[in-house]
Image (cartoon, rainbow, N blue to C red; front, side, top):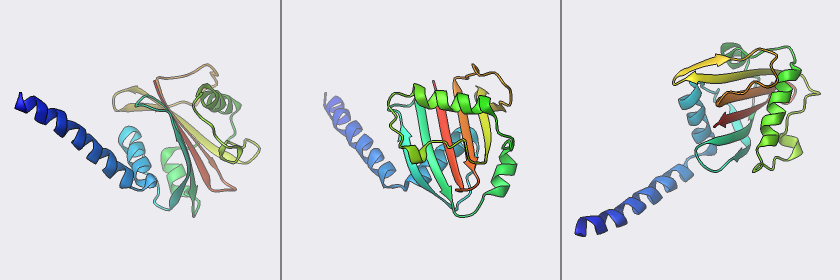
Length: 164
């Protein structure tokens, strides 16, 4: 009986401590860590997190806007961003954002498709393996997608992660 009472007290305290430690970390650190852990993508260090919106819970959609001090040319090449504009990608990303009812993304943080951009869409096919989507199928959706679009003029990277 004493053990049960002790566990009832100790477990919530440990959870609160864990949440407190995570909240003390800079947003950039936790965001960069999540991107690296799930997608094995290491962001350059010279950015700041300008905006972030996350659906509640583990599954769902996470949307972030990162602004770089310098153009992350090496990062864009290493990841394999596409240079040519792609209307299908625009539609898929716009639909993903619109499907997320919990999001209230102000206009300055939305993609501006009139500006020059580079893009990539990664999706997970099994644990630890992912592929790059470069097709023209507007109806394509995986259970786990990573959409990234980089706008050269503003040095802004929009990252939208979708988990279902």
